[in-house]
Length: 101
Image (cartoon, rainbow, N blue to C red):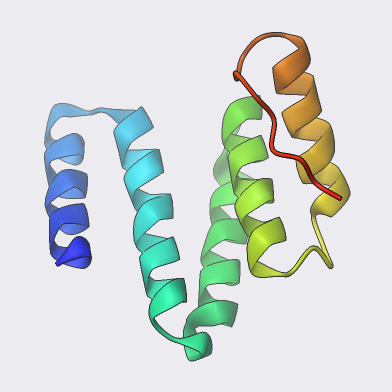
């Protein structure tokens, strides 16, 4: 059901041109697919990395690096995600940066 609702949200966001909702919903759908099967891990990582190459905003980059960090158990992207979240927290662009150890 989450996939269906996510797909509907994505379609509506595309119809009205809400890039922020398109971005967030796309990430959410990738995460849903990732969590539904361990065989989807590499595909989810590739999809997020592709989004990362096309994302210009610091917040979007931070969000994607953090999701990649979580999916990859911190082996890659950890420092980029941590640095980006700290940058955003410093300038008040996010309320609280996730603690990355």
